[in-house]
Amino acid sequence: MTPSTNLYGFPKPQKVPKEISSSNTLAFTSTLTPLISTAQKSSSGRHRPSKKRPNIFKTQKRTYEERNSQNIQNGSRYFSNKNKDVKRQKLEGVDEAILHRSKQKLEAKAKIYAQMKRGEIPENNDILVDFDQKWAEHQDAGSDSDLDAMSDDGQESLIEYEDEFGRARQGTRTEIEKMERQKKVALLSTEELGRMSARPAAPSKINYGDTVQSKAFSLDEPIAAKMEELAAKRDRSLTPPEMRHYEADKEVRSKGVGFYQFSKDEAVREEEMKALEKERLETQKRRKEREDKKKQRLIEIEERRKAIQEKRAIKQADTFLSSLDNELNASESSK
Image 1 (cartoon, rainbow, N blue to C red):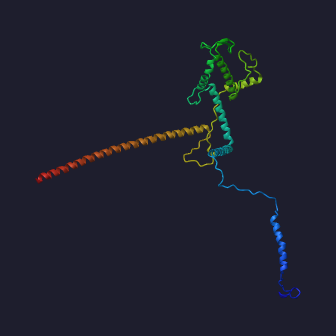
Image 2 (cartoon, rainbow, N blue to C red):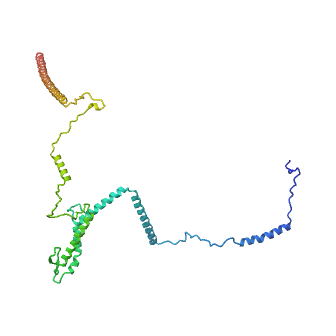
């Protein structure tokens, strides 16, 4: 099959260009023109207003106060959030044991502060808060109100009152108020001390005075037996502990040259120790004698050396004098 034939061997029909008549062209143009005009007028969706972007050159300048207030507001918000985050991160990063110790230290400081306010701590120069001075300043501030309560002659009127012991007394209004304040402070300090103190509270059921206690010294059988046992332990004689010594055969290790194995029998052990002590004393005696002889020998050598030096000096002097005499004689003979 050649390219010019088809599947069945027949020749392919040749493609002849078709000629388009002018009437067909005009009909196509007249049909297409109204379609294009109607397509431009029709819209496929709803109308959406266009968004105009603001012109950067036409923006109104803000005043200095507006910018400053905005910056302060943004800065405060930033730093507040930052401080919160920092505190949260710090607390999350700290160990629970450290937080517990810090809490205990703060509670101890609170107790000390309460004791300082009550005056239970002695005077100390290291204390930074002077509560007496604070109380004096508070009294000076309230002195103006106290002056109004005075009478016309410059003295406060006396008022009769009952003290804590039930006695009738007379005093000024200031003294009465001061005493009431002292009572309240003492009561509050006592309550706070009992609440914050680490010591246990005193028991409420305590017998004071001449109270008969019938069962305080009852010698029952178990109590009597315990007392007898304690008395026996107290009165018995002290027994010395058992003698225990080092046993070299129970250790697997090499001993030194000077190691000596004592006997396990106490009597033989005592004799061996006495013999060793005697040998030690004899050795020390001989060593001292030898050292004394050595010192004596050194002294003799030093004396002999001094004698030799003296003889040598005398000989050198004689030689010098003889040589000098010869020189003098030679000089006289030459003259």
